Image (cartoon, rainbow, N blue to C red; front, side, top):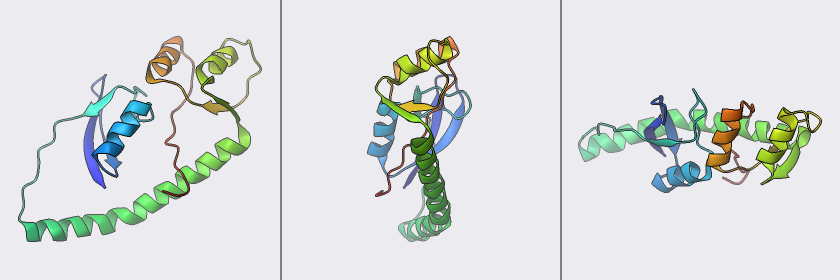
Length: 144
């Protein structure tokens, strides 16, 4: 796991854990990475000052950090899986038509009901600008 300091387009700073650098890139490109303050999906890595240490110190520190973070990561995954199950059981999957269906509900053209699906980062930003309320959820799989 790797911890990055992140910054959104509106200069909010927050941290994020990723399995590796490619994991960050995947989440960022898919639009699933969003600022917890404003919801912006325009997220980049912020400058971080590296901590330089001896190899012995590094192995001890990494091990201690991993042991400390593991129960929290396991609990977070458990909660995200429970959230996913609740969404899947109580909402309608609309796939790539999420933005269109969300607009219909927002403007009263369709009956209000829970939906979930996918949309592009640009489309998500347009929905926010229109005042359509929605949230991005990390879609955790059972097998990861």
